[in-house]
Length: 489
Image (cartoon, rainbow, N blue to C red; front, side, top):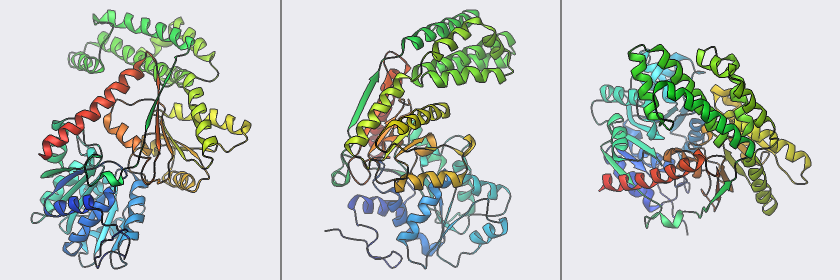
């Protein structure tokens, strides 16, 4: 029997009383906290419970990195709180004068949800201050590093509300070592770390089974040959610099910084050439023929001398010819087989596919559309990409809704789909390629197994960069858990 939290500000029988959520919320209500729990275990509920205790003291500001995530939070919070609590979205479509009034009026109980860019712009323009804000919630708090607007807002909040300010950072993936996690805490003015893993006794009853299947693919012979040519070209440029044939990205960036500071133009030329050739090699390894062809074609519009040097090398035409011989890449074939198996075994399946590159999204969508014309069962692909890649916020929301409703049963997403989106009934999450970042890997995996068991499949090409990315990602995840346990203790 489910027990619910009874409170005058919550709608009856809407928020279940899960012990781990209550425990974390109680601690976070007393001290600014970084709360870390696996995806799908109710971070928004924890935020709502903390907000519940702070509403009588002022405005609640909830920040999320993307507009779809902001809209999702607003819908969830409206379902939780009674009508006396005003839950509003602040964005660029709302007039500056209205946005100003929202923060100046502290009489009504109010939760304001926005992207950090919107709030930071208003703060810099002097339109608002945060003196009336009793709680700032930083969703996906791992963004609180560098020059991201979370850090600026946290600094301004400390200045504007000097007494009884409270902040809450929530994430499933704060970083893979203690230094990264400590940096987030410093930047967002968080005083403690609270962590619950899947192995915690209070969490275990709510964790769904999500087995991971690693699908290792043989690289196409044509791409193996193309890769050899690109590697030779890259090695020649490195020889000109006196650098080893195998050089890490970190060392390459360091060499670029030295060359730039000394204005060593010949070195910068060869370093730029190496960077472009390494990108081509990476695409051949992890994305397949079509993204490689599109990248090389894009060098025609690149006016740099490095791009011109690559274009003029006759070997690059041979690379294009080899890649062009492949009609459907090995990864795409493995992906298609996986999707067919999933849909034929469970016709109402929802499949969420992650790709790191828009060119790979397009290539996969093309193959799935072809397959849908031939199949006697439903393959209905859709796309979710960032606004900078040509998809408006309205189109993003439409794609998510079509996926929720089942009109689309395969949603192909870039990084914009990795964070926070709550699509409860995803049966299969597919990584088109491994990602080195433990944070991103955790976020991807967390899109399934939220309310019922799901599956995860990771495609990787044998003997390529994919294998390194796979090992590095899971090492980072293991290190993160160790760091969190150490910091909480």
